[in-house]
Length: 200
Figure 1: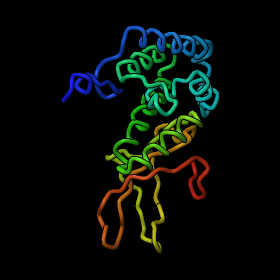
Figure 2: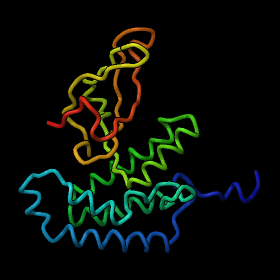
Figure 3: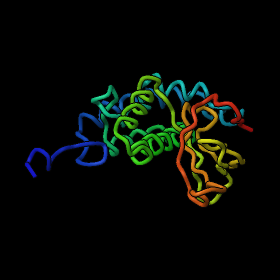
């Protein structure tokens, strides 16, 4: 292994520079100040946070961890944690939304073993400034994949689905109900607006 490859940095390895942390911290602080203006009132109103999600997208925070080579921020997890803490001081709910987004979007690496498929999802996420939600809570395994033709039909209800109402993509785990893969838990992505998906 060369010295260059040993010191290679990604959001999974190496470390964030002070400059990176400061730059993204400044962006996060700007968003936090806007969120802090009416956080209590918005929390009491208990409305779907479309406006707040828009702030995250416009600021570029949603793309912080995405690969720089594909147009993303190329940031490190240390920076992402710093950003989430800044937002949490102003609006804990939106900080949670962003934190789950980072975790779910990072799962592209694990959910799509084919490099071309992974790159496609990264590009779509970057270009759309997507927010990723999830329905993968192992304590609430109520989603089922029923074999149908060459594919599956997803059925069930999820009581806890972070970021789903404002997410552009939803990472889902569901158990196959029959056939050769019966009992297997598969990961899939549902894009916002998919027919048959309803947010209650």
